[in-house]
Image (cartoon, rainbow, N blue to C red; front, top):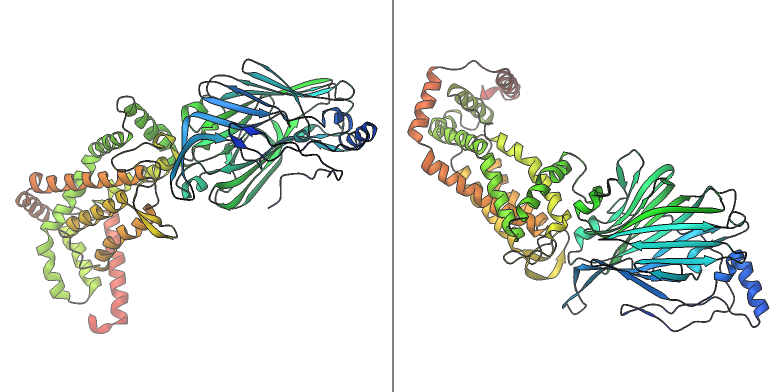
Length: 592
């Protein structure tokens, strides 16, 4: 993958290393000052040659500044005037150490030592990085200003102002640099490299759901590949915002009234259990080479909470991977508001899931009733169909044709039970995306599950299997068992003689899906298990206490006495089956 970091001229003179500093208890690499030659005149000449008019800001000492509110604490370094750590006060990180012991700490962003946040200032004969400059800091309340001055009285400033919540106003200013910065460039390049540290216990979904997102003006948001190295270059597009997103947290930069003049975006996978991937963005900041120019931006450093992101009105909420099709719309418009509404009255997210299951099942029960009624009618006809096996013996096609004929005579639609399943497919698929993407369930416990956004490890295994993991999920096991029970109860009333292989496929499906869902969010597998229990309960009660086989048989006899006209679809189906039977008879004339 192409690197987003541009080449910077190397300094080959001797370096002097100062003592390491600490940021909120985290040891950093030793800070390196600029070269210190033997005489002041040689030092000035070396810095002037390397940094031009910014030579006065090319040496100094690292100073740390901190601003905070009730939700966010941000630490800055005067070296580069950039953020070196953002601590989210209301969110915890729970990770296992090398000994397998869980350790709890605050969630922090932008604190990897390999991160970069720099402006590439193109002077008339060289390009320098703002990360190499020592800024003077001036803090007033929750605003901190970093200034790098030039030898001729100009300056480059970065101003951070922390408001409420996770909102950080950000502004850069160019003062008196019109004769120093290149006149051939209509923009200044921002280079932002962010190594995403692992935050969640589950490794699979954070990796899948972390990427760099960006939005072009008058277009939908886009993102780099989440599962492989990727590079997207948009040099001619107007970019409104860019977001470096984890599964549940993000750091975003939004343009002001004037969008960014194009950019490039990349993801690079990392094979390290403590790091997810390297995310890069290069943005072209508009610059008109004026005597005094300022560019206002907004930064968001915080959780992927839909309401917070949506409040900016720029589509930033689309970084939450609910889905891009109708399934995403179902999550945003139906499922998410439903969970939020119920959560106002019920603190337990697990109980909210159970209540939502009950509501959905009651709303769909009229359709489910029709499905069960269709199955009951086929069950009543089972003795009627039994003799077909003896009459036509091994001729499966003939048995199938005669079975369809019997169904038509008695007015039974064998596809009548499919509609409820078809209607539920969009809801099911939407839920597959909703649970691992929604921060609502992060570190929410229910029954034996400690975190509904991750798997519920009932048993840890001494080995790891691809896709399966190194554990057994109890909710997934219970769902698979309930699926087998549900299948058995339904299948024993149905005649599968026409296609006996389907009987065994029905039992293999839970096993195959068990492998897939073992590493899924326990919120989803919890939903699946209790939803299936509800299905079994509705099925047993309806078939045992609501249906009357004698009444159903009377209805079928009445249908046979008063046959309905064939529908076009049914006629085409019968014609196709007859044609298939004719072809089969030609191949095997003895079976005529």
